[in-house]
Image 1 (cartoon, one colour):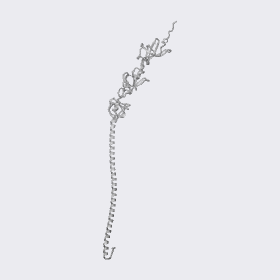
Image 2 (cartoon, rainbow, N blue to C red; image 1 turned 90 degrees about the horizontal axis):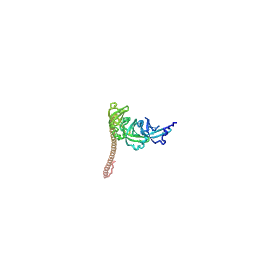
Image 3 (tube, one colour; image 1 turned 90 degrees about the vertical axis):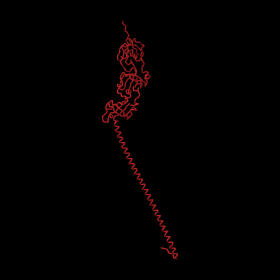
Image 4 (cartoon, rainbow, N blue to C red; image 1 turned 45 degrees about the vertical axis):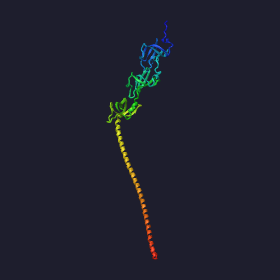
Length: 359
């Protein structure tokens, strides 16, 4: 009688458990993973995500090929279902275990560009350690609409660690931080009302991008592109532009060509208005001075007349008193004379023995 051969899984070492290391040979490989034979008739699957700590999933063909002899770690083991999952990345330490020590904030590193998005660039510093450079952290001065304008996939790029996110296994990186912030200098150069030569590099209905000195770009709203002859400035024209707004925080410079000639006109109008106002003010002062002088003269005349009248009245009183005194004096003198004339007559008549008095 022929004996039944037990299934290979039944003869699998009963002491094998999750976490143990096993050796095997790659027998089948596909994009999603590879099957490893660890004993005759017993196979385990290594999913491609368990082949590398990297989050940039690739095909299993990038890591293994058929007949490779490898070592792996048992991740799951189901003897009843006869299933086993394996991993090979677990044979090396998880790079995120001490990530803050190896990639501290402000440290500088070299990375490889792996992928683009509209908001930034994903780079890989080492296998399993990814980071994101936000589009705003690529350049201090250039307006970058898409990362493809700045670099290419597969290229190396210098980065600075800005933030470490251990929980989500991501690093926030910067490239522009490798250099000093030129906006500290731009702030002293592109002051409001300062004038600079600029070239229109791109224009649309909203306005135009203006290439300014020192590699910086400004923006001129459409209404500020009107020239003195009432035509609009066009792409590639080089003109004088006046800074009308500067923001270091937002890295924004607003410029205007229109203000160049409008301000001259407004300044002339303001000067004319100021001259007219000055003339009017001077005329008003002169008129006021004349009026004040007239008022002072009139008041002075009135006072002089009043004093003159008072003096005249006093003189009249004095003259009256004087004449009155003179008149009284004359009367007294006449009376005295009269008395003197009567005395001799009386004496004569007395001598004649007869006293007569004149009636």
